Image (cartoon, rainbow, N blue to C red; front, side, top):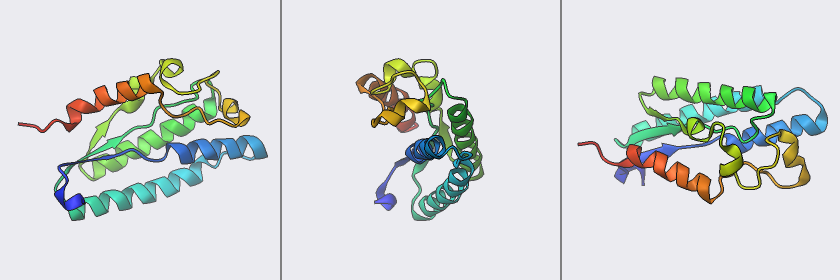
Length: 151
């Protein structure tokens, strides 16, 4: 499939990061974000390397939005993931799609099940991290200019 692709988008890591934050809250142990970040860096690097070897598609790495803007741990962890994404994308000469900027300050309107913007909101059983219909619209509108072939 890669060989025939014109565009590849990579948007990974958010669910793993959210789960690490929840484990930290439940166990009262320091954040597992550093371990997640190390795994993420290794995995994203392997993915980019594989794609670069297998095709000549334009590659776009998407940043993560912060579904818990009222939690310092989430801000720190998402920031770390986005810095790693940017560094790796640059080292592989791929483009960055700044999804986090599209959601910044608008999470309550763009995330399904959004409550208070705190990690603790996810302890009630649901994981309010995925976009709602408006959020998907924002993503589609934001991605469209990146996907249209350059002339």
